[in-house]
Structure formats: structure tokens, C-alpha cells
Image (tube, helix red, strand yellow):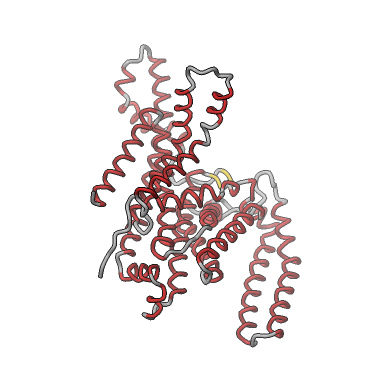
Length: 456
């Protein structure tokens, strides 16, 4: 079976399964799954750029997703004037101190030769910076976090349209990836994985504890949305008329005007939820198509051939005059930027920023499974893997509960076996993920849509 036919059948099977969810469960559930699949596909493409193109084993995915999420807060949330008045100058001073300290360290490293004199000078700069932060930054943080901490307690954002935050999420993640790459990309692959995981934990820990930035674990809720709210649609005459026309057949069966009004109200509420999720799906699909088109074009370009050559044989590529470290840094930044965009999209969909949800299971393990199952090095395979894995991740639990209910329908509810089966229904998704990964690795080790070998 050629790859085009395999891709067509695989995506067709996914959308058929999604349609069955809409019919058997609800269309709102089906669209919610679709939206998360689209976001996961963008994130999977970012990891595929790093691993599939260059062989970089980045286990710090959740850090860049979290930075994309905090970008939504910094860009779209309204500023908090009281917090800025209380401690904004301290934060500005703290950032300036860090920038000056960094510049001073660079000057010292350039001006002085290696030795104890340079070491003492660097330590002196760090000590001075630490003292200055204690005088200006920390009092400012305390003043900001004391401003109505139950509702704000942070600086807020710039109050710009939320769609701008998606691009800012990519830029913020790219900037962080540049700094991380400068520190870690010289490490061997296994040490690189450990370093990126550790750095990602540091980033998430900072976001959880620095309340002045994004309220920490108190979370930021009520973030702006790029689509209408359900309540707005439910009260809009044009939307009510649209629902009435679409559901005219069902409404005609109503036995009275009161029954018809109640039925129309119910249809309007359901339709508003579906319409909002469809609007999100359109936005996310546009971003996915843009990122996918850029990835395909990059992979088929001379730059893409060069990256694959570096991935396959670094020594030979270096002998041909390629700067391996520079190219690794470049692809690391690009992949992290795409993950940051996906992180901003996810926070926008949730409508809140919750640092406590950034855990390795969701943002590292699942995304890597998506890339491996779909086919690393194949952009369309990364999208397929994201669709398939997220669908199974969501539907494994209700499917497990249905299977357990069917198996135990004639069993004694109080028996230990019945209780055990009921208890294992929810975590069945972990078993399903492992089983799926095992089957794919056994029968298609390069993924469902393997990378196509190109010559010339």
C-alpha cells in the first residue's frame, strides 16, 4: 500500500470515528476532541521539526507550551493599574539590573583572560546584582502581590486582541529556546534530554511561584476569546432565527407554543456551543495548515536536505563545512516556537492559564507518542499521530467504562472482581496508549506514515 493511500485511509478512519462520537455521544464532544487534536497536531509538528529533521531529543516540551500559555496572559489580559503603581517600578528595575549584570559579565569575559581574576570579577558582578535585586525587585514583587490578591495580585497584560498572543507565544518560546540551546545543545543526546527536562521543570516552577507575573497556582481566568461567547449567540436574534430554520422539522412537531419555545431554547443553547467550537476549529485548522505548509516547504528545500544530512551523519556534514551547532540551535528554536504557538492556542481554548496542569504526561509523553506513532520525519505523519493518539486518549476512558459495564452486567456488584474491574476502567487509557505504541513499533517501526527517502 503506497503512502498516499495509507494516509487517505487513516485520516478517513479518524473522521469516521469522530462522526460516530458525534452521533453516539454528542457533537459538542466530537468538536472538543477535534479542537484538541488540531492543537496537538501543531505541537507535534514542532517536536517533529526538532527530532524528525535534526534528531534533537528535547524532553522539555511543556516549558515551551507553558511559555506560550503565559504569553496569552501578558498580551491579552487587561493591565492592573493598581499593581503597576504599587510595584511596577521595582519590576522594571529588576529587569534592568539583570540586563546590566548580563552585559557586565560579557564584558568581563571578553576583557579578562581566563583565571582567578576573571572569576572574582564575575562573582563581584553577581553579588552586586543580587544586592540590587534585594533593594528594588523583591520589594516591588511583594507590593504587587499584596494588591487584591484574591482577584489580581499581578501586573496583568497589555489588553491586546488575543490572536496577537499566539505569535507572541511563539516568539517567547523561541527566545527561551535560544538561551537553552546555547547552554545545552553541546551535550550528548541523553544528557540533552536530561538537561531540557530539568530546565522545563525550572520554567514551570517559576510560573507556579512568581505570582506577580501570572498569579502562579491561583490561575488567571476569564481570558479574552477570539470567538463569540455562547451567551452572546443565545441572545442574538440572527442566531436564534438560524437555529429555527435549521431545526424547523423538529420544531413543527411541538404540541404548543410553550413547548415550541422551550424546544427552540434548548436547540439554541446546543447550537451556540457547537458554533463556538466550530469557530475555534476553523481558527486552529488555519494555523495548522499554515504551519504544515511551512514545514513541508522547509523539509523539501535545500535547508531541509542539509538538516537531514546532519541528522544522519554529523561527521560527514561537518567535513563538508556545515556548522552543526549553529544548525541544531536554529532547528531547536524553530521547533520550540511552534510548540509555543500551540501552547498559546491551548490556553486560549481553555480561557484560563493554569500552570499546575503543565505536567510531563500530557506535554511530553503524549506528544512524543504522537510523533513516533505517526512517523518521525514525516510532517503529515506527525499530524496523523496527533489525531489518532489524542482521540484514543480521550475516548479510552468512556470506552473502558462501557466495556466494564457490559462485562459486569450479570455479575454481583459487591464482588471483589466487579469492584476491581470498575476501578481499572478509568486508567485504561494508559494501557491503551502502551498497547498502541507496542503494536505500531512491532508492525510499523518507522510509524504509520514513515519518512520518505529522498535522493538528490
